[in-house]
Image 1 (cartoon, rainbow, N blue to C red):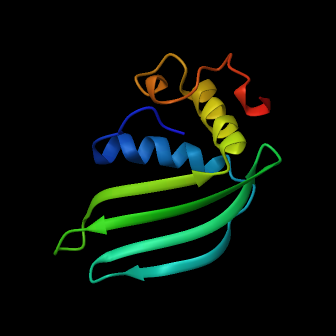
Image 2: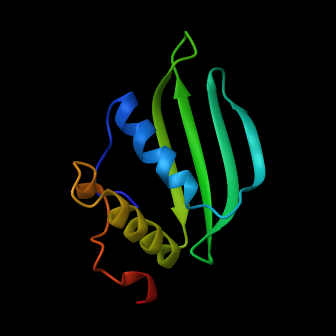
Image 3: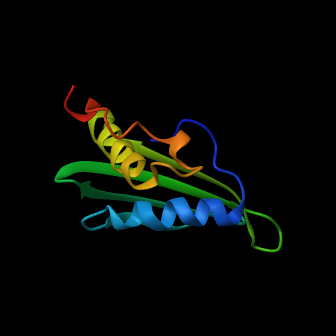
Length: 109
């Protein structure tokens, strides 16, 4: 859903906080520890009525602070819809560059 890398805790929080509002529910398949310090969650949902699945891995430092986050959504048509909806919300902001343009209707093509 992203064209680039969002950096910094505030920016990541801003994007993720809105992105979570687009999920119509979250059905967790797995949530828990990953390795010594890390965390993983695997869930399904719908966005705009379309099925979407996600695996997120949170990498933490020795103090338990998040250092890196990887979020992987699928399938592609749902990812494109999700990105377009995020693009509509963030249009005109510095975050708009990360998402599909609001006018793109790639989620059906």
